[in-house]
Length: 273
Image 1 (tube, rainbow, N blue to C red):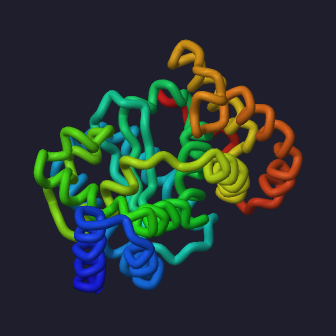
Image 2: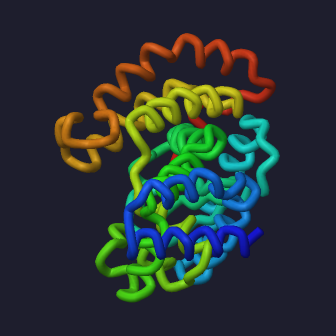
Protein backbone atom coordinates (compact mmCIF):
# COMPACT_ATOMS: atom_id res chain seq x y z
CA UNK A 1 0.00 0.00 0.00
CA UNK A 2 2.58 2.57 1.12
CA UNK A 3 4.98 1.39 -1.59
CA UNK A 4 2.37 2.07 -4.28
CA UNK A 5 1.97 5.71 -3.20
CA UNK A 6 5.74 6.21 -2.93
CA UNK A 7 6.27 4.87 -6.45
CA UNK A 8 3.56 7.16 -7.79
CA UNK A 9 4.97 10.22 -6.03
CA UNK A 10 8.47 9.55 -7.31
CA UNK A 11 7.15 9.16 -10.84
CA UNK A 12 5.18 12.38 -10.58
CA UNK A 13 8.16 14.25 -9.16
CA UNK A 14 10.22 13.10 -12.15
CA UNK A 15 7.47 14.24 -14.50
CA UNK A 16 7.40 17.67 -12.86
CA UNK A 17 11.16 18.10 -13.20
CA UNK A 18 11.59 16.69 -16.70
CA UNK A 19 8.39 17.57 -18.54
CA UNK A 20 4.77 18.57 -18.20
CA UNK A 21 3.52 16.08 -20.75
CA UNK A 22 0.12 14.49 -21.08
CA UNK A 23 1.83 11.17 -20.36
CA UNK A 24 2.45 12.27 -16.79
CA UNK A 25 -1.16 13.35 -16.48
CA UNK A 26 -2.29 9.94 -17.70
CA UNK A 27 0.01 8.27 -15.18
CA UNK A 28 -1.53 10.28 -12.34
CA UNK A 29 -5.10 9.48 -13.34
CA UNK A 30 -4.29 5.79 -13.72
CA UNK A 31 -2.53 5.43 -10.38
CA UNK A 32 -4.40 7.73 -8.00
CA UNK A 33 -4.21 6.03 -4.57
CA UNK A 34 -7.26 4.37 -3.10
CA UNK A 35 -9.25 5.72 -0.19
CA UNK A 36 -7.74 3.05 2.05
CA UNK A 37 -4.20 4.10 1.10
CA UNK A 38 -4.90 7.81 1.60
CA UNK A 39 -6.50 7.17 5.01
CA UNK A 40 -3.51 5.08 6.10
CA UNK A 41 -1.04 7.81 5.18
CA UNK A 42 -3.27 10.42 6.84
CA UNK A 43 -3.11 8.39 10.04
CA UNK A 44 0.71 8.41 9.89
CA UNK A 45 0.78 12.16 9.32
CA UNK A 46 -1.65 12.61 12.22
CA UNK A 47 0.73 10.80 14.56
CA UNK A 48 3.44 13.25 13.48
CA UNK A 49 1.15 16.19 14.23
CA UNK A 50 0.50 14.89 17.73
CA UNK A 51 4.18 14.18 18.35
CA UNK A 52 5.25 17.66 17.24
CA UNK A 53 2.43 19.67 18.81
CA UNK A 54 1.76 20.73 22.38
CA UNK A 55 -1.26 18.78 23.58
CA UNK A 56 -3.55 20.68 25.95
CA UNK A 57 -4.02 19.25 29.42
CA UNK A 58 -7.04 21.40 30.25
CA UNK A 59 -9.50 18.77 31.45
CA UNK A 60 -12.82 20.59 30.99
CA UNK A 61 -12.06 21.51 27.38
CA UNK A 62 -10.63 18.06 26.63
CA UNK A 63 -13.74 16.38 28.02
CA UNK A 64 -15.99 18.63 25.94
CA UNK A 65 -14.01 18.11 22.74
CA UNK A 66 -14.04 14.33 23.20
CA UNK A 67 -17.77 14.03 23.85
CA UNK A 68 -18.75 16.38 21.02
CA UNK A 69 -16.45 14.63 18.54
CA UNK A 70 -17.75 11.21 19.59
CA UNK A 71 -21.38 12.29 19.14
CA UNK A 72 -20.73 13.88 15.74
CA UNK A 73 -18.77 10.83 14.59
CA UNK A 74 -21.62 8.50 15.58
CA UNK A 75 -24.13 10.75 13.83
CA UNK A 76 -22.08 10.58 10.62
CA UNK A 77 -22.55 6.82 10.33
CA UNK A 78 -19.01 6.47 8.93
CA UNK A 79 -16.87 3.55 10.06
CA UNK A 80 -13.66 5.59 10.29
CA UNK A 81 -10.95 5.08 12.90
CA UNK A 82 -12.05 8.27 14.63
CA UNK A 83 -9.63 10.14 16.88
CA UNK A 84 -9.44 13.69 18.20
CA UNK A 85 -6.91 15.75 20.11
CA UNK A 86 -6.99 19.23 21.67
CA UNK A 87 -3.85 21.14 20.65
CA UNK A 88 -2.54 24.02 22.73
CA UNK A 89 -2.31 26.65 20.01
CA UNK A 90 -3.71 30.20 19.93
CA UNK A 91 -4.82 29.85 16.29
CA UNK A 92 -8.65 29.61 16.04
CA UNK A 93 -8.71 26.38 14.07
CA UNK A 94 -10.05 22.84 13.83
CA UNK A 95 -9.72 20.16 11.16
CA UNK A 96 -10.51 16.57 10.23
CA UNK A 97 -8.15 14.68 7.94
CA UNK A 98 -9.29 11.94 5.54
CA UNK A 99 -10.21 8.88 7.58
CA UNK A 100 -11.45 10.75 10.66
CA UNK A 101 -8.31 12.07 12.38
CA UNK A 102 -9.35 15.34 14.05
CA UNK A 103 -7.91 18.24 16.02
CA UNK A 104 -9.27 21.32 17.78
CA UNK A 105 -6.99 24.22 18.75
CA UNK A 106 -7.43 25.91 22.10
CA UNK A 107 -7.51 29.30 20.34
CA UNK A 108 -10.97 28.65 18.97
CA UNK A 109 -12.60 27.63 22.25
CA UNK A 110 -13.19 31.11 23.79
CA UNK A 111 -14.64 32.32 20.48
CA UNK A 112 -17.18 29.50 20.33
CA UNK A 113 -18.65 30.20 23.78
CA UNK A 114 -20.90 27.10 23.76
CA UNK A 115 -20.63 23.35 23.31
CA UNK A 116 -23.25 23.66 20.58
CA UNK A 117 -21.01 25.99 18.57
CA UNK A 118 -18.18 23.49 18.96
CA UNK A 119 -20.57 20.85 17.59
CA UNK A 120 -21.19 23.11 14.59
CA UNK A 121 -17.45 23.38 13.96
CA UNK A 122 -16.88 19.65 14.35
CA UNK A 123 -19.91 18.86 12.21
CA UNK A 124 -18.43 21.03 9.47
CA UNK A 125 -14.98 19.43 9.71
CA UNK A 126 -16.34 15.89 9.88
CA UNK A 127 -18.49 16.65 6.83
CA UNK A 128 -15.32 17.46 4.88
CA UNK A 129 -14.08 13.96 5.71
CA UNK A 130 -17.34 12.10 5.09
CA UNK A 131 -17.86 13.89 1.77
CA UNK A 132 -14.25 12.97 0.83
CA UNK A 133 -13.22 16.58 0.13
CA UNK A 134 -9.65 16.01 1.32
CA UNK A 135 -9.27 12.87 -0.76
CA UNK A 136 -10.63 14.63 -3.83
CA UNK A 137 -8.17 17.45 -3.28
CA UNK A 138 -5.30 14.99 -3.02
CA UNK A 139 -6.41 13.25 -6.22
CA UNK A 140 -6.59 16.63 -7.98
CA UNK A 141 -3.10 17.52 -6.76
CA UNK A 142 -1.74 14.27 -8.16
CA UNK A 143 -3.48 14.79 -11.50
CA UNK A 144 -2.09 18.35 -11.62
CA UNK A 145 1.38 16.90 -10.90
CA UNK A 146 1.75 19.06 -7.80
CA UNK A 147 2.20 16.53 -5.00
CA UNK A 148 5.55 15.13 -6.09
CA UNK A 149 6.90 18.64 -6.51
CA UNK A 150 5.58 19.65 -3.11
CA UNK A 151 7.39 16.77 -1.43
CA UNK A 152 10.65 17.34 -3.29
CA UNK A 153 10.82 21.09 -2.68
CA UNK A 154 9.44 20.97 0.85
CA UNK A 155 11.98 18.34 1.86
CA UNK A 156 14.82 20.30 0.31
CA UNK A 157 14.02 23.58 2.05
CA UNK A 158 12.26 22.38 5.20
CA UNK A 159 8.89 23.51 3.93
CA UNK A 160 9.71 27.20 4.29
CA UNK A 161 8.84 28.15 0.70
CA UNK A 162 5.75 26.16 -0.15
CA UNK A 163 4.28 25.58 3.31
CA UNK A 164 1.78 28.27 4.21
CA UNK A 165 0.51 26.73 7.46
CA UNK A 166 2.12 25.60 10.68
CA UNK A 167 0.86 22.05 10.20
CA UNK A 168 2.46 21.89 6.78
CA UNK A 169 5.82 23.07 8.15
CA UNK A 170 5.64 20.51 10.94
CA UNK A 171 5.09 17.69 8.46
CA UNK A 172 7.25 18.77 5.52
CA UNK A 173 10.29 16.85 6.76
CA UNK A 174 8.68 13.45 7.30
CA UNK A 175 9.00 12.50 3.63
CA UNK A 176 7.32 9.75 1.69
CA UNK A 177 3.64 9.24 1.02
CA UNK A 178 2.50 10.58 4.41
CA UNK A 179 4.16 13.90 3.58
CA UNK A 180 2.32 14.05 0.27
CA UNK A 181 -1.06 13.56 1.95
CA UNK A 182 -0.22 15.99 4.75
CA UNK A 183 1.16 18.75 2.54
CA UNK A 184 -1.81 18.51 0.21
CA UNK A 185 -4.34 18.53 3.05
CA UNK A 186 -2.86 21.41 5.04
CA UNK A 187 -1.61 23.55 2.17
CA UNK A 188 -4.64 23.56 -0.15
CA UNK A 189 -7.91 25.29 0.68
CA UNK A 190 -11.22 23.59 0.06
CA UNK A 191 -13.31 25.04 -2.76
CA UNK A 192 -16.34 27.22 -2.13
CA UNK A 193 -18.53 24.32 -3.18
CA UNK A 194 -16.83 22.01 -0.67
CA UNK A 195 -17.16 24.59 2.11
CA UNK A 196 -20.84 25.16 1.37
CA UNK A 197 -21.52 21.43 1.33
CA UNK A 198 -19.64 21.00 4.63
CA UNK A 199 -21.73 23.78 6.19
CA UNK A 200 -24.97 22.12 5.12
CA UNK A 201 -24.00 18.55 6.02
CA UNK A 202 -22.40 19.71 9.25
CA UNK A 203 -25.58 21.46 10.35
CA UNK A 204 -27.50 18.20 9.92
CA UNK A 205 -24.80 16.18 11.70
CA UNK A 206 -24.88 18.41 14.78
CA UNK A 207 -28.68 18.14 14.84
CA UNK A 208 -28.49 14.34 14.63
CA UNK A 209 -25.96 14.42 17.47
CA UNK A 210 -28.46 16.29 19.65
CA UNK A 211 -27.25 19.89 19.41
CA UNK A 212 -29.47 22.83 18.50
CA UNK A 213 -28.59 23.57 14.85
CA UNK A 214 -29.32 27.27 15.40
CA UNK A 215 -25.86 27.43 16.99
CA UNK A 216 -24.38 26.89 13.52
CA UNK A 217 -25.67 30.33 12.56
CA UNK A 218 -24.53 32.06 15.74
CA UNK A 219 -21.11 30.45 15.26
CA UNK A 220 -20.36 32.53 12.16
CA UNK A 221 -21.47 35.72 13.91
CA UNK A 222 -18.95 34.98 16.65
CA UNK A 223 -16.21 34.07 14.20
CA UNK A 224 -16.78 37.26 12.22
CA UNK A 225 -16.70 39.37 15.38
CA UNK A 226 -13.48 37.69 16.53
CA UNK A 227 -11.63 38.57 13.34
CA UNK A 228 -13.00 42.12 13.19
CA UNK A 229 -14.77 41.90 9.86
CA UNK A 230 -13.94 40.06 6.68
CA UNK A 231 -12.69 40.44 3.12
CA UNK A 232 -15.24 40.42 0.27
CA UNK A 233 -16.31 36.94 -0.79
CA UNK A 234 -14.91 37.33 -4.31
CA UNK A 235 -11.39 37.61 -2.82
CA UNK A 236 -11.58 34.20 -1.20
CA UNK A 237 -12.27 30.61 -2.15
CA UNK A 238 -14.47 30.41 0.95
CA UNK A 239 -18.07 31.68 1.16
CA UNK A 240 -18.36 34.90 3.12
CA UNK A 241 -19.54 34.66 6.72
CA UNK A 242 -22.66 36.62 5.76
CA UNK A 243 -23.50 34.22 2.95
CA UNK A 244 -22.83 31.25 5.20
CA UNK A 245 -25.22 32.59 7.82
CA UNK A 246 -27.87 33.31 5.16
CA UNK A 247 -27.64 29.80 3.68
CA UNK A 248 -27.65 28.10 7.07
CA UNK A 249 -30.64 30.19 8.14
CA UNK A 250 -32.47 29.08 5.00
CA UNK A 251 -31.73 25.42 5.79
CA UNK A 252 -32.44 25.69 9.52
CA UNK A 253 -36.07 24.42 9.44
CA UNK A 254 -34.94 21.14 7.89
CA UNK A 255 -32.14 20.76 10.45
CA UNK A 256 -34.58 21.57 13.27
CA UNK A 257 -36.75 18.65 12.13
CA UNK A 258 -33.72 16.38 12.37
CA UNK A 259 -32.95 17.78 15.82
CA UNK A 260 -36.50 17.12 17.05
CA UNK A 261 -36.13 13.49 16.01
CA UNK A 262 -32.79 12.96 17.76
CA UNK A 263 -32.84 10.55 20.71
CA UNK A 264 -30.87 12.91 22.95
CA UNK A 265 -31.16 16.69 23.03
CA UNK A 266 -28.39 18.80 24.52
CA UNK A 267 -29.46 22.19 23.18
CA UNK A 268 -26.54 24.61 23.28
CA UNK A 269 -24.72 22.31 25.68
CA UNK A 270 -22.28 23.56 28.30
CA UNK A 271 -20.86 27.07 28.31
CA UNK A 272 -17.18 27.35 27.43
CA UNK A 273 -15.44 29.11 30.30
